[in-house]
Length: 88
Image 1 (cartoon, rainbow, N blue to C red):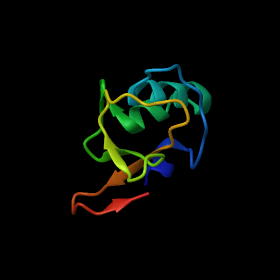
Image 2 (tube, rainbow, N blue to C red):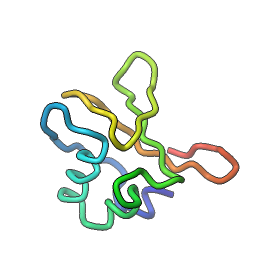
Image 3 (cartoon, rainbow, N blue to C red):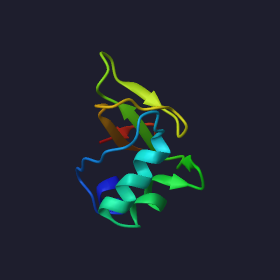
Image 4 (tube, one colour):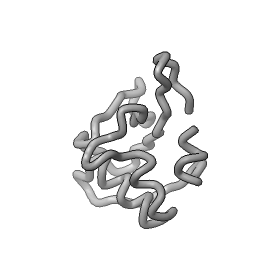
């Protein structure tokens, strides 16, 4: 679902140290097009149906819009449907 909304299946962007999840979305928007931001964010928060997951840690971590990301982190944005099922 997010691939349809964003028009992006996979991308890699560089962000500064101490960047937040929002900074990652902003970098993706610059790299992949302005449709990415509203597909993932509502204002300055992740949309209620969007989940950000840090996959580069030992166990996947769910992130908020203001969570800090570290250099080399891998984030996956997932769609969460109303029935609480996650889709990558």
